[in-house]
Image (cartoon, rainbow, N blue to C red; front, top):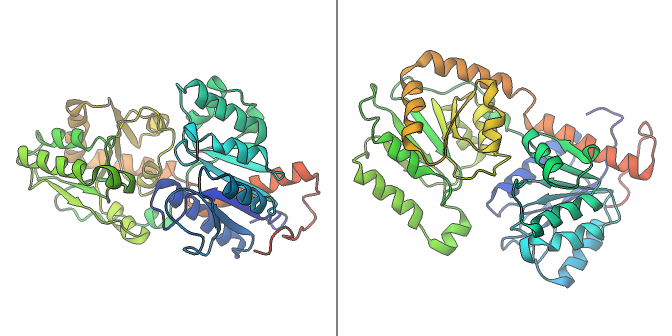
Length: 394
């Protein structure tokens, strides 16, 4: 990083490993990136929320807030106010109260510059959900989003000052950007991530029911563990339904399941081995997809339903979008990509160009600079003056 960038201390609020979810992985990767650039983890700590994690389970976590507990929230606020800045990860489901309204009390009581990263920006929020975002905008120094679509939604649907919004893309591990591991045998189509209803995997299975004539015979790999929340409430019923659907269509030779939760290195190798990535999500609200970012960073052609983040990247040439819930519409680009190696190659090249600057160290540097910037603005400090991390011991 620039030597004149102040290494302000940052207190993060988020789910965090060993909790298994997208926010936990995102925050861990972001802290890793910032600490890599700084060559130190000093002053980068987490107040955990959600899951069953205790503060002793991860060295980065200094406290674990028990959502809905006023005494715990008071302690969390006291700890966070010892940092130069605070970074809060927001999803409606991880904080206490209706729509996670507990976050309002947290943000409104912080005395230090605060950035709230919005992982979901609803286009049709309820009145209560809109109130929460509007109130966060009143108290936060920055609202961070990871796509232009999310920024546009904030401006159209909520009371947010345009100067308050920072668009910083989701990062991708450099492991994904290493050379392709495609073998040239049967073409591999891949979907990965935590599995549960809403992933749209049944639509891809239905599409493959009419692709058994493709030569060479393709493979479709569904990789990922069942989401812990789904596992707790419904067990493996969704995955079992998918397996039954595969058997119903006689697709055992085409479709495979891998239910492991892979480490980053193993996952990156799997993605680099794929010829095509399919993201058949049911959601029409998804303005950020880490899986989409990783697929593009790996230089893979992507077929996705028309969720907002995929639509935003459509003009890049790396992504083909199809209607939600339409196996017939999905079948057409699948057949085309499975039989046209030249098109796969061109889309892969477009993907790698699009992903320039998405590596986590670059994203971490942008985020770190933003946090230093809001501290400089609030404290009216000269950015050319070196500032010690004085609020916390590390």
